[in-house]
Image 1: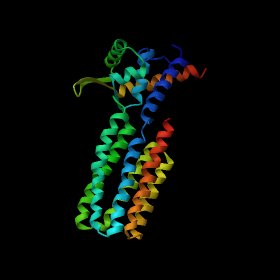
Image 2: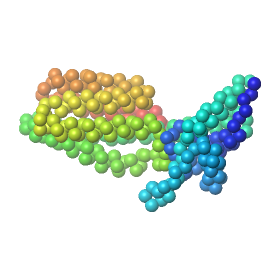
Image 3: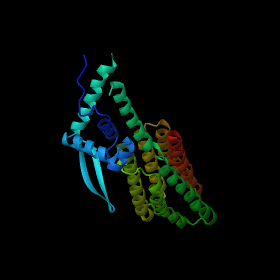
Image 4: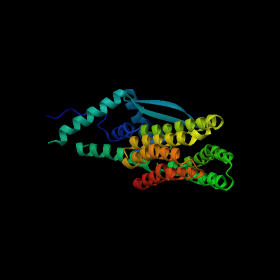
Length: 94
Length: 187
C-alpha cells in the first residue's frame, strides 16, 4: 500500500532545502542557494512556503555589515521529512 | 517527480553538505599539532642546554600563537554560512581544552609545576578521544587513549627534561596524523 507523499516536500527545490537542513544545525540563504543550485528568487519563494508550513524557521540578521538570513529545521519539519522518507520507501519497495 | 528522483535529491544534498564539512576539517588539528611540536623543541633545547626550568614559561606562548594562526587560517578553511552539530561540538571540545589547559598551567606554575605536564597530557588525550568518538574514527579514539593514559604515565616515569619531547610525540599522534588522515579522507 502506497503512503501519501507530503505535497509540500514533493517538490525538487523544497525537498533539496529540507535535505540540506536535516544534516545541519543551520544554514544561511547563500549556502542554501549554492547547495541547491537554485536562483535567489525561486529559493526565496520556497523558503517562504516551508516557513509558513512550520517546517523551518527563518532568522534575519547581519553578519558584519551584510544582511544574513539563517534557516533552521523545526521539530515539525524533521517529523515531516522522516514521514516523507518513510512514505517513499513504500514506493521503492515495489 | 518519481520516488527514485526524490531519493536522489535527498542523497545528493546530504552527500554535498557532508563533503563540504569534511573538506579541510583536519586543518585546525594539523595547525595546532605543528605549533605544539615546534614549541616542544623550542622549550626542550634551552632546557637541555641550561637546565633552567624557567624556560618552561615558553609553553604559554602556544595559546597566543595558536589563536593568531587559527584566526588567520580559519578564514580560508571554515565553511561559510552553515553549521553542523558534530563540527561545532568538536570545536567546543578543543576550546574547552584550551581554556582548561591554559588556566591549569597558569595556576600550577606557581603552586605545583611538576604536575602541569601530566594534567595537560591527560586533557590532550581526552580531547582527542572525544574527537575520535564524535567522528566515529577508531584511530583518533585510540590515539587519544594512548596519549591520555600512556603519555601521562610516561611523564610520571621520566622525570627529566627529555620528558618535554613526549609532547612532540603526542602532538604527532593526537593532532598531526589524525588531521592529515581527515583531510586525505575528504579528498
